[in-house]
Image (cartoon, rainbow, N blue to C red; front, side, top):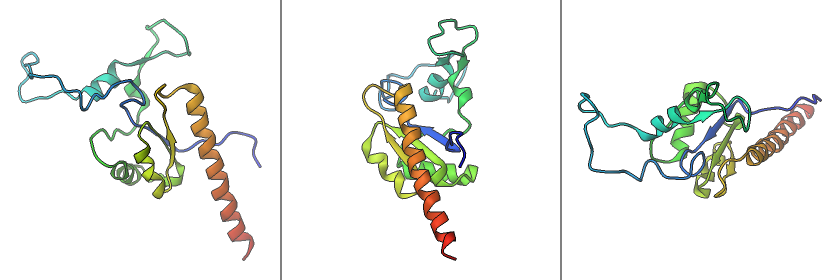
Length: 159
């Protein structure tokens, strides 16, 4: 048995009230205005927010010169309304990552439905995704993952 911590292959985050404290997709401001010379273009504020949100290289570091735009930490983007089941089915199809290797953080309990696919769900409180909550989510995933590994070992031991 390895003492090194095990991590999920995919960690997903809902955006609104999980990574920031507002609903970007429903708090639409109007009327629409022209953005320079561009025509027939509506800006997606979620993508824009992820580009503008800067992550310091060290927690608590206030220097922005070495900060990295949050968008660079995400390899797959599934940003649109609808069931999270659809999001995870698409992520699974795009990446080939098994559902039991996925961990999902969201502030809406109804989205726990992704566990029916095998995804581990971590509910996010009004405090948002903190370091402590992130570690808790990893621990929940590890416990669930260990239980699944134990079940598989039990199946193979009976042969």
